[in-house]
Each structure stands twice: as C-alpha cells, then as structure tokens.
Length: 143
Image 1 (cartoon, helix red, strand yellow):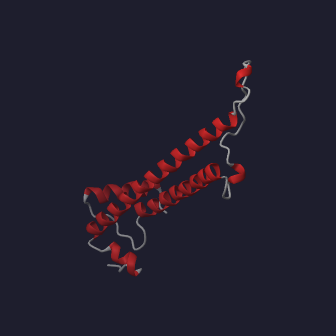
Image 2: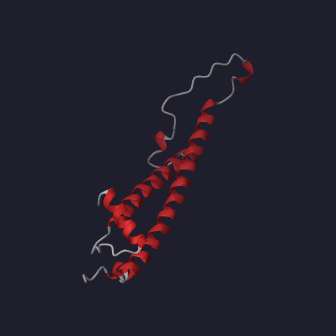
Image 3: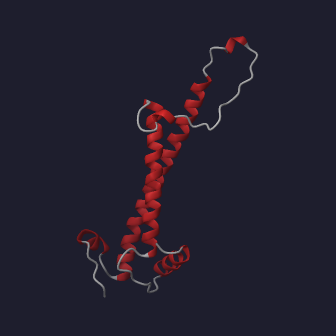
C-alpha cells in the first residue's frame, strides 16, 4: 500500500502519458484498487447476509435481523388501529435499506472492475508490458 499522495502522483503521470515509475508488484493505483475491492466485497457480503436474515430468517445474522438501533414509540388514541403491526413496517424499512445498500455495493463493485480492467490495459500500454500475462504466469520481468 502506498500513501494517497503517491497514488495521485502515479495516476497523474499515467494519464498524462509521462514516464511513470514502473513497479514489479502492484503499482500505487493497483494497491488502492485491491483495498477498495476488498472493502466493497465486504459490504456486498454483509448486506447480502442481512437481506437473507430479514427475508428468509436464516443465516448467521438471522437473530439480529432488525435494522433499528432503538424501537419506535407510537402514540395513537384510535382503537381502530390496535391490530396494526408496527414491527412489519420496521422489517420493510430494514429490508429496503439493505436491498439498496446491497445493490449500490454491487454496482460500485462493477464500476471498480471496469476501472481495474481499464487500468491494467492503460498501465500495460504505458509500460510496454503485458500485465495480463504476468497475472496468469505469476512472473513479471524486471527491465
């Protein structure tokens, strides 16, 4: 991992066409991308488990399927609404929240994948090497 400043300097030099420093392992942008993908994948997994717990009542988070950190208090003097199930509203809110979080995380991961593939091809072209080949073989020759 490199500092954010080093990542910005590397990306600027890569995009401007200037000769950027070559790295045998992950370059600064690649290292940051790995971190971003791991964090996003964690969000996808956790939100998926929360959805599974809410919708199916199963999985490791099934006992903790509620979203609210506190319970709502309802003051209502109408006797007509005594049968109303307030927990159902909370479950629907939680389900909607986790569905939105899951979908946003998946879409963000797709964006990261597109940026990663683009970065691999751009970096390969700028450094006149095949990063795809080195990913397959596990060897990247020093020049």
